[in-house]
Amino acid sequence: MIEEKFDAIVVGAGMAGNAAAYTMASRGLKVLQLERGEYAGSKNVQGAIMYASMLEKIIPDFREDAPLERHVIEQRFWMMDDRGHSAMQYRSDDFNEDKPNRYTIVRAQFDKWFNRKVREAGATVLTETTVTGLLIDSTGKCVGVKTDRAGGVVQADVVVLAEGVNGLLGTRAGLREPPKAGQVALAVKEMHFLPAETIESRFNIKGDEGVVIEAVGTITKGMTGMGFLYTNKESISLGVGCLISDYAETRESPYDLLETFKTHPSIAPLLEGSECKEYAAHLIPEGGFKAIPQLYGDGWVVVGDAAQLNNAIHREGSNLAMTSGRLAGEAIHRLKAGRQAPTKENLKLYKELLDESFVMKDLKKYKDMPALLHTNSANFFMSYPQLVSQAAQNFLRVDGTPKIEREKATSRAFIEKRSRLGMVSDAVKLALAWR
Ligand SMILES: Cc1cc2nc3c(=O)[nH]c(=O)nc-3n(C[C@H](O)[C@H](O)[C@H](O)COP(=O)(O)OP(=O)(O)OC[C@H]3O[C@@H](n4cnc5c(N)ncnc54)[C@H](O)[C@@H]3O)c2cc1C
Image (cartoon, rainbow, N blue to C red):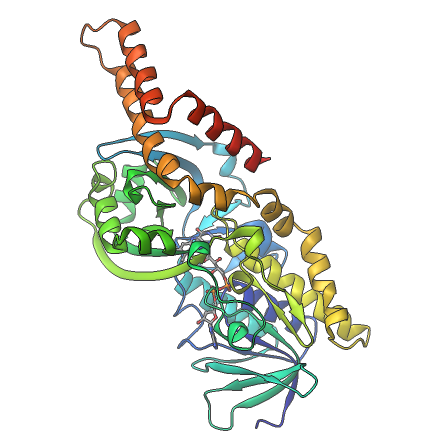
């Protein structure tokens, strides 16, 4: 047993853990942060877009030295079929502002930087240390953690669980159910390296400008999921993610999906000549509001992916992780400053702060979307992308067929595939879930 007692122990040095540890340490709390990886970021995989406003609330001048790749000026949403894609895209010079709103990052570098800030703020950080269990006293209160280091039991007033989506510690301690297969996506991702000038000419960008592509359609073979491609300075991150329950049902392999995505006629030219140097797989919590577990208890709080705080509709996770980590840190600091014990009753403050924030408001807004997409995945992720592609071809091909015949062919295809009632019902369900 390590004799020293801490105000707080933070398990994990990802986005949520770093935000929580920094918030508490910079306010003078005695913080121990434990990370199983060789260094912060070594276990982390992310596409990755980082949202500046949420980091600004923690480290306002982060732009001075954070390892940022490109600021995003253009977002492309693709609906793909096997041969092409229909697109909606938005590009604006407004995104070339003094303090850009979104950046691509490489997590291995970014987390390392963020964790350095945590150390500089005064926290003790131990890497290559796995927390193996929570220390629970006879009253059921969490009073510290057990680690895989010799004699590695450490005590603290409160433990912040920022252990990521698997959440094994919380599950083992009976604080929450293990995530269900229908609420978690498995994403496989690669990093493809190209010279900066090649990326800039291929994506029509200059300097530090960046482009993001997010794609749904036949690439996920009717499963709930999507593909993504983000431009970094000298690399492209791309990947595909689908719900685990869908993989189990279809027996599709994530690697095959990624291969299909990479060799798709719309994607392959963007990667041509690149060298793939990194491959990784990671889970993403996608159950939304209804999957959020109990967020606090006697001596503990849970933040970030471990708390299922992920907005799959907007593909936001790191900003919810940073915000929940920060709010947990602020709540714990307020209790400490007011000499209030971190009991379940008092730690409710964290949940109250979270409820007031965009995190819970956004997740609540989309509370019915995960189930809707899951139960209608064949329509939303297969039939409609194919139909839209067919409609685009009918509209654009010029071969002497009268336009009226082409329009009738488009309507017929939609009705045969989904029926009028089916389409109205899909539209109504979508509108209701989007409210
Ligand atoms: C492929 C992919 C692409 C994504 N793209 C985006 C994106 O573009 N934008 C976005 O906002 N979000 C994105 N996300 C989601 C985002 O990555 C997560 O929401 C975010 O990383 C959650 O942060 P976290 O700190 O909760 O968890 P994590 O970042 O997973 O960190 C958890 C940390 O805890 C450590 N840990 C776990 N167990 C223990 C233990 N027992 N002891 C010690 N340490 C432990 C892990 O090693 C890890 O470092 C993406 C996710 C994936 C998988």
